[in-house]
Image 1 (tube, rainbow, N blue to C red):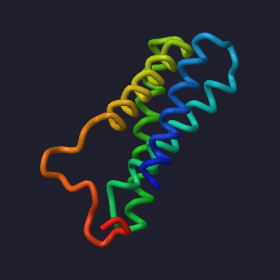
Image 2: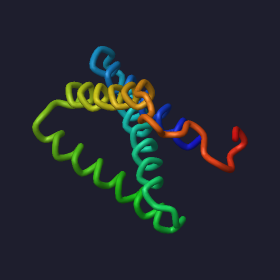
Image 3: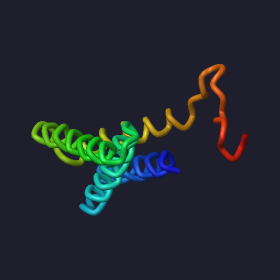
Image 4: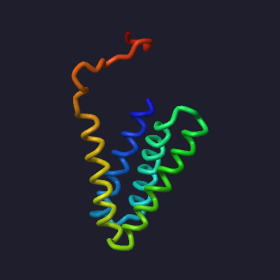
Length: 115
């Protein structure tokens, strides 16, 4: 479920940032960034198992992404930067969804409702 939230937020946020290149609406910029922030936070939180450490890694991942984005904003106009970031996010989602599991990797884990 958490993976679906991260992928969905990244996909919709990425498409919103790409659309901001063609449609001059500030709401697309801020909504796209907010959704990508949610996706980055969810992925960052997934790096740790202890809840307090997951919260710290989620916040750290968002702050790191924000710092990189602000550094890039000094060199590139917002619509073009948004299109590149959104395109990368959309591409990452596509690769994640479409890739095959490694050979010998079980699709179900012991103890879940499918086994």
